[in-house]
Image (tube, rainbow, N blue to C red; front, side, top):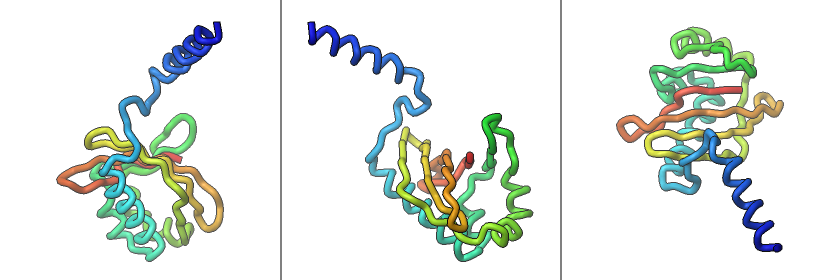
Length: 140
């Protein structure tokens, strides 16, 4: 009897995870180190207030989403235009312990961070192009 209950619970858990947006993604992949390097470069560029280095890390189709309705608040072009002012307003970023899922040339990164000492959770989608991991979007 106990065996059947455990088997039923296991099947329910699997069924509940079937539609997960993380399906097929893996943690611990070799690519994870390259992604963590890109995240460190992002943090370093931000804290050095170097817009050009930060923009080099962004894919040409980069966008920033906000809110539960996922409205686009910045495209890369608009972000580039306003980035210097944004960096003045939000001086320092410190990334916490990130969680990375990799699937081929794509990755999802959950990144808890501190922005000027205030906690923020950010989700990045990243893409590998020509051997380099680039930020495709940011959602907070």
